[in-house]
Image (tube, rainbow, N blue to C red; front, side, top):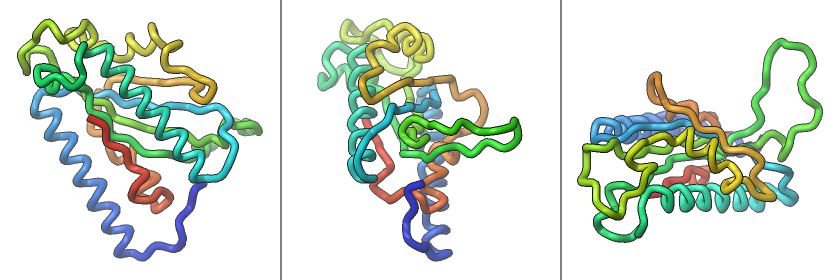
Length: 193
């Protein structure tokens, strides 16, 4: 696990407050007419130290966001397209320790480290649709999109992208659990618009 040096109770409380602020911001997006999807990116082995791994993982998440954006709008920087651009909040995460069920896998790609994210898409009808908006923005079928185009998102580094609708509650706390526990640094949180 990418651990930080000892952090104080005040630091943990601050991290809890920051996580709650992100949770409120995502709730605000939902109230503004967005639909949220939880996802994670699993990686193949990335050699090198912690900073190199994080850098490559963040690069691949930026690439994923850019590709999804191209499937939603034709001109990503056009003013008519701005309301339709997807919003991504995410953070690195460590391997998940499972309880029960016998022996765990001995070999974990990339040491089990992955990237959790929430992606928000605007719900059709909450902003004007124009000729620049593509089919994915009109259907909001992000899981189906990733199933159909998984080959576009996989690379030598990315082994799998999993996306599911966020049906219950707000998964922000889960997405930021590594940050909240003090095992991710402040700049490990990624926000892409």
